[in-house]
Structures are given as structure tokens and as C-alpha cells.
Length: 114
View 1: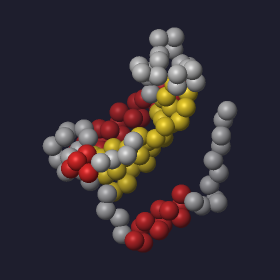
View 2 (view 1 turned 60 degrees about the horizontal axis):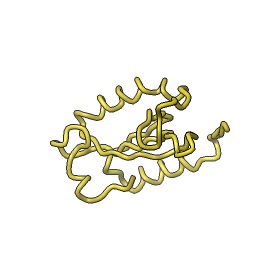
View 3 (view 1 turned 120 degrees about the vertical axis):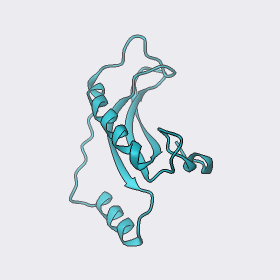
View 4 (view 1 turned 135 degrees about the vertical axis):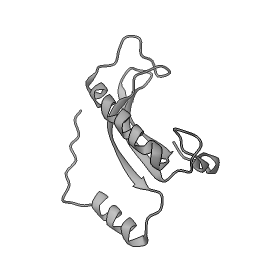
């Protein structure tokens, strides 16, 4: 979900404070055929709210193993949480390069389960 300029003015949770962190989450949602597809969600959070968001996300990790329920549709569904990253909104050029290098590193292996 792309962020628009008006979205970036306040925390997505409290809607009052200026955000300090960008939240990027990998999740799975059922499509029209009932098959789980990966999706990426983004949010902006202030220093006060980021911990609550992390705690809530950890509690929902168990949902990832649940099969698509009979009552779930592409409009009404249970989100399956896969993982997330939290980054400060302000990064130096060196920090950005280090982060990009780690994401693109050959030393990490990703596993695809079909």
C-alpha cells in the first residue's frame, strides 16, 4: 500500500503524534479463489506506539498456520502475519547503504514453501 503525503503526517495508531518509524510487514491474505497470497503492508508509527504495534504483531504470528476458514472471503478475512521490519524514518546515506547491502546479501538464504 503506497503512502501518500497526508498519511505521513501522523502516527497510524494514535493519529496524534508525528511518526518516527516506518513499519513494513509481509502478510498473507486469501484471494477470490481462497488461496493465500503474499502482500506487503506499510505503516508509520510514533515512538510511543511502535512497541504496542510490535507486541500486537507478535501475538498474531500464530495465525500464519491457520488454514483459510469457510467464512473467509477476499473482503472479510484473517490476516496471516509472516514477518516485519521497523526502520527509523531518517537514515544517513551510510546507514541506507548498509541496510540495502544486508537485504541483498548472498549470506542469507530465503526458503519458499509452496
